[in-house]
Image 1 (tube, rainbow, N blue to C red):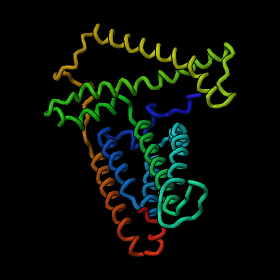
Image 2 (cartoon, rainbow, N blue to C red):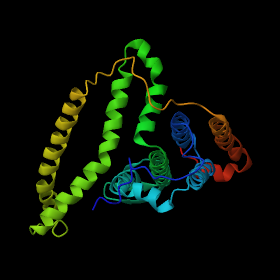
Image 3 (cartoon, helix red, strand yellow):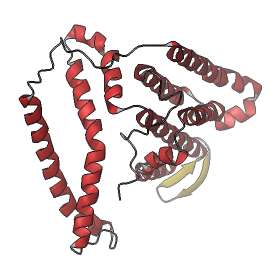
Image 4 (tube, one colour):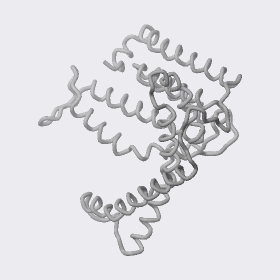
Length: 281
């Protein structure tokens, strides 16, 4: 049931993206998210799609693995798309029925919203598929180091994120084992209406929560037994270093920022009628 969940699962490969410094990849992801919301026409949004495609090709990750990450939010995408489509206002009314009114602006806003969220999840999936949880948290901790000046617990936050990412595959496997055990006892999770299916999930959630708390206690005891204290003098087995590959990647990111901004500005001047129709207002 949960075999399609790819978030937090590392995909080993020898690629350009895999060898990048995790801090570089985190900065690139944040920049891409900003680009998604800066894009105000379909041309710049298409450029973001090309960036995603190039990143997947450079990472040598199967496209199916990346698309699986979107399956987990399909319900959220569909639900929010329906709400935006039926209740987003505008000036150009296309059809009306009872309290539901569909505007041209609502359709454009819905398409933008769905595509932005779709690309955002795909980009985040590329990051987690090409970066181990330990490297990812090391990169986050390194980027948040300036917050130590205001007594922010950077190391503790990085440790929490590392543990959380580490246990995502473990909890998925545990859930699958519980589901298989319940099915062997005659449980039915696929028939009936939505309320019956939700009720049928209770025999899964309770053992899963108990197992999660038990694993947390065992992990805490193991850390105490090893005298873990998270002191500021801790050293790292692998030190992060920026290389030529990372510098080139950041230059490409800067060029992409400039490209999307130029698309936002000059496509409106070249095709004013098309831009007036598709521009998100």
